[in-house]
Length: 321
Image 1 (cartoon, one colour):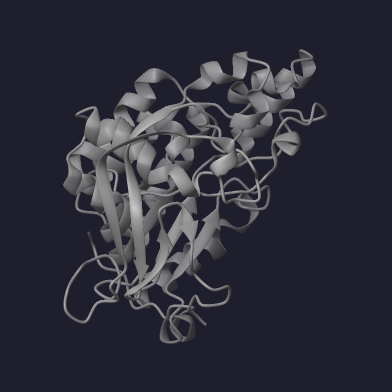
Image 2: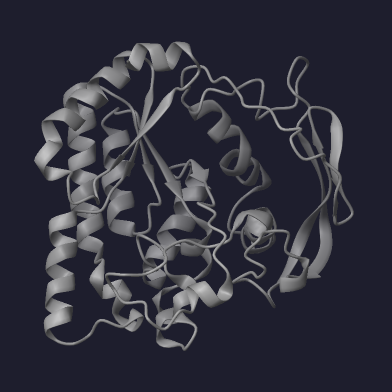
């Protein structure tokens, strides 16, 4: 099945270590990872250890601390670190490449950096929320807006992730975009074990990264392009059709004004979510025009693409960034 998937252009798969069923089926997951590696398929892994999460939730529930105020405590860093260690061990045992999704902590990042230093094909993704927010957001009344899995961490974790982007040990910034409305995210019935995880990130991921990264001197422009375009195209088998400007490539191009300053506003969001957690942030750097396969699909705040004009891409084998 893995060979067939690769031959039909489906060259990645995903394992959720956070699922309650993971531990009972570890041998099957290892076998799947092994087969995927042999077929040139990249295995994505969500690294949080379910038994540790369950223990944390049980302790908080016994103490009657089940509101979202305690959400970061219900998914501690140690659960991410332990799961990341296990994922790396599986990759080392099978020789298969892995792509760690949603890396949120300095501890998990260190595990992955150490694995790469040993020569393993281990790749790292983080999300915008970990670069722009810390767990203090859960002390306010709108804490539900910031629920993600893993949760927001401490300032030291955020600093480590920015450093990882700068030094190349974080390869991709991915949105994990979810279009929950504000009222859904702020539903007061949510608890540490029953909640809506995920944020609307897609539209402003690049302005936020450019403004907070390039403009603030944290990263160079080359890293901005790499983590938002080139590296993902390589890892997911779309390079050089995507992820570069070259003869024979698809002419997917964003014309960028590095000096334009804007304030992010809810009313400018295209997503069905209807709002942005970054509303009110002033950013410098904004897309002016977007071309897809050589055709203008966005210009000066207006989407010009026709519905249904997108194309499903057949992907090749992964390449290291």
